[in-house]
Length: 497
Image 1: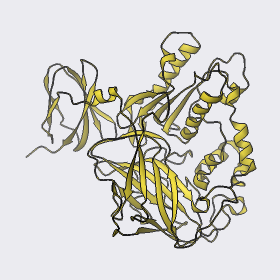
Image 2: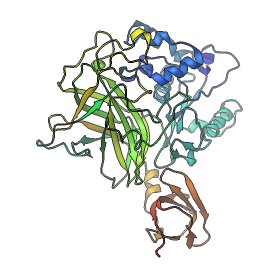
Image 3: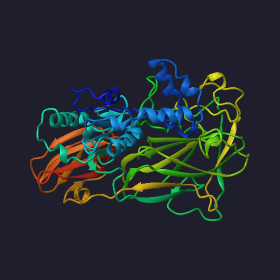
Image 4: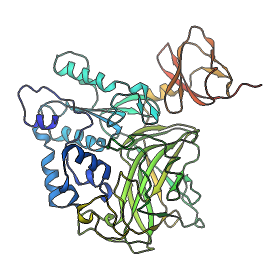
């Protein structure tokens, strides 16, 4: 609504803050990878009526070209905008496209004044601490605070340094810190390849020539892999980063590939890319991916989703459609949407491969027939069970590519080893901390929830941890001298008898 208002250029409008909204109506917004987003469309129909035009055009065509050419009009936006987005929101991909478009194509008088804030938020939880199974106390109310700064500068004329803020303000998950950049992804990205192995591991080396050629799983459209969280919209579904281990990974219709336990952080900024070599015994099927971070307690927290409908592997027009030859191996390239996340030492990165993620995406009937028979985008007509394969050999090296960012000098300074000493570890009912110039200690569980906070008065203090459940915790120690902090992992165990 704010975009439409701004396009009309009312004389009283000074600036605008659209939140988790993107005006561009594009084919891939409704058909990612060629598969219609079922739950999303169901929610939109509940709110706004039928979307027959979307359902009736499953191929990229003139209808979509018209929609794309008429729904985003940056040249008509003559006021500064602060876009607010969330890493777990379905609109963030398009918000990142929009901020680039505004910066390049809105009037010269305003094009350098647009900015974007991207936090660790779901569509319905801007500024909240808890997001799915995770918690981000450092991001609480950040959207409100930044919007007030924006309004103070543009409406009230307060000289608060807003003009010095870079175009992108984003939350680096895993570190719990806000960062800024003039471009996205930030400059200096290096691509790190990791390869899938038939052992279920993700390793930096290409599989050896003698490695097993593939792993196989079945997909039954009448018993699809369920949607558990993610970038959903429907009010009946979970939104955001939820554990996949029990309801998704425990099924026999998925493959799960995991890195070894990380011995150092992975500082990811941008889109994680995936190349798979696949085959099927059916003329059409889907390959649906989930990206998770696995914690020491076994929880596998969802960070991203992607899908490819195989009939559209060469493009999305009717002329591009091509079916599979059963047993033939095909390469496919997928991307997870943008993330800023530091995968922590001691955790793992996991790729889950299935052929469905329902009701987030439409169920492929595996027949090669009409996708929406009778105009129904959520139905099955004589579906077939598919046997699908992912290849992981030297001949067919399926892989992930991670966009590894450059940590700034400020980042390196914050993570430099400080002269803090924590003991014992594993710890029983008491934890002692020693070190100069420290003033506060915070204790977080592995999902980012603050469970204890202590003020320090001396250079050596002992803290009572009785009543704290067994498990792994992160201790963050703040220095009073320069407000830098250092994180430690501790293992809470039962007291010796």
